[in-house]
Amino acid sequence: MTDDDQQDRPLPVLVCPDGFKGSITAADAARALGRGWLAARPGDAVDLLPLADGGEGTIDAMAGAAPGARELAVEVTGPDDAPHPARVLLLADGTAVLELAETSGIALLGEHLRPWDAHTVGLGEAVRAALDAGARRLLIGLGSSASTDGGTGLLSALGAVLTDAEGRTVPRGAAGLSRIDHVDLTGLPPLPADGVQILSDVRSPLTGPHGAAAIFGPQKGLSSDDVPLVDAALERLAELYGIDPATPGSGAAGGTAAALLAWGAELTAGSIGIGGAAGLPARLDAADVVITGEGRYDGQTAEGKVVGHVAALAAAAPHRPRLLVVAGSIDAPLPPGAAGRDLVGIAGSVAAAIADPEPYLVEAGRELAQALTEEVVRPGGGVVGPKGGHVRPEGEVARPEGEVVGPKVGRVRPEGGSVRPEGEPTMDDGRDDAVRAAGAAGADGGAVLDDAR
Image (tube, rainbow, N blue to C red):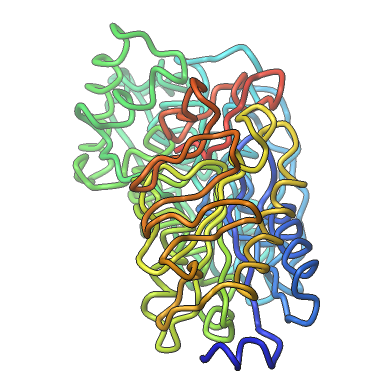
């Protein structure tokens, strides 16, 4: 598309961010970016498509993206053994979307972690409700789990029987893992007609130094002495399940993925599964500009995250839509030809960007749209300045390719460095699949602009 084409006709613009963890949902982020874009280019056709990667916000993202979807309210047994309300999203094609964070998530525990007793019974109860509602396919988002029970609670709720050497039912949670001597899966319901997909961006195996207990257990309360005990129990559980504990992704959600694999489910990168169900490929094909975003853009973004998936689709599209990235912080080089804007650079501090990101997202959308109108557009995508710089708000200096330009209150780091006031700490929460209750609590808990892994 030539510069004249850009000026003469409205552009179809797809806005498809992930949520900004602990700060703003994907739907609200998409609306804010869309408002900002239309403030600068009111004639463009903006298509909002909030996305998720299987963690918190998956149901909300799918509800906003799938016409005809309806919510089924269920009551489940939470990881604290108390009843909790949860939702199953039923799509028009017979797909049911479930979110472990709502049924068995760490946020349900508040400040009282239960490293040995938390479990996934609630997720199994929600799965049963989806099957009873006639679901032909299940999409199960795993993220922010409270337990390291290897999915035993899930399977028990679905009809599996787990017993010790004396034939007695074992306790729930990690506390019962070492006692399991026999696993009978014959009572499980058959898979729905179109199967079960596990949605997760976690690639950890079930056991070992990078497994469920070692990597995520401490965030759920396991001590350094507890970890090897639970890891050994999970190793034995994998044998009883009949799966390879080294399978990438089987350690997701405290080993819940391993239990689903034992049932016959398939592992899918959450961003791919959700994007496919939401119609992302077709909607991206119809767009000339694609705006995506997340709490923190870094070296892990390409590993199953929403922004990485969107970038890959845009790069592979024959018409090469322009890719624009908005993130709380940008800590890695953007894809070739892409431009980006960080909220910290607009807000002036991490705290301000976290506390109220919406106006800064609006401003980011406006700046990117204004840059597209005023700056040179290179063939092959990417909004750049006349001298090869990225997006250049008013009064700022264009930087060489590969740098992100922020307001004068911050410093600019080359090669994808984030923009922060002098001396301010970086935003980094370890990107685990579990979020401490304090971290998910917003301002009181000091949540970061990230999407905890």
